[in-house]
Image (cartoon, rainbow, N blue to C red; front, top):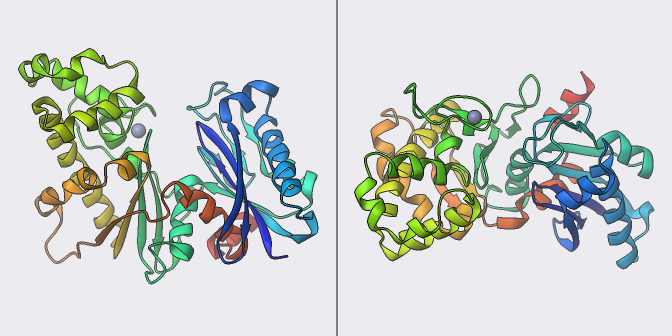
Length: 338
Ligand SMILES: [Zn+2]
């Protein structure tokens, strides 16, 4: 059984790959997650979408199910890790549904299924196949639609009481009563300011207050703030061209990123922080600029870790899903048994 199935359940794309024990991905098939959810509109829709993609990737590579060691899945959350269910995912169109994934796929294929949060899966992938091979203490931080994390301390993958020991994006960076409200409902969270959704909202806040004059002169005015995907893409484009408004906003983003990252450093004492997610991968030099503010926040005598942009990039979750099958984290085995 030298192959496995690796799955990345994202808010935008559902990807299924054929992986090998050495961590190679031989083939990937994908569909829009939204289309899959809207095709069946019930609690098994995501699992059915995965089932179809698995049958597709096996047949087009002439691989028999007997040669599959298991199915590893990295998924958007929140998750009920024990039961393998995605609970009311806020970033999917039918967000009031609990999506049953693990049980359905185990029934259909008769294989072990291991499902963890996407960033937790990614840090496990970096440990086995990426930047973390030589390290025992690693934090993976993703900057994409949200801000997420995965944490390994002394070679142990942290899960916590319910499997949520990694929600680093929801640390408070702005405690003022009129701070931005996070998508999770919390006040002044890091994700509400510095993620793909947060950057346009934070920019709007500053454009209406202390940076009004710079905003009025900036070409980013043409974009508006509503289409956050477009705004964030254009924001980094104008930032690289030297636009003064974007530079002033980004300086504050760097400050908040330094607060978030210094919290991670104090909590987990990592030797390596791997930064991934589309915002980081597309703006590598910019995203690392928070380092200039770290000394303001990190306690003296505490190690400043090495920072690296994820070498696995867009494949970190799929690679992690392979590692879940062939090198199942002992914490997970214990967690689902209890
Ligand atoms: Zn939050």
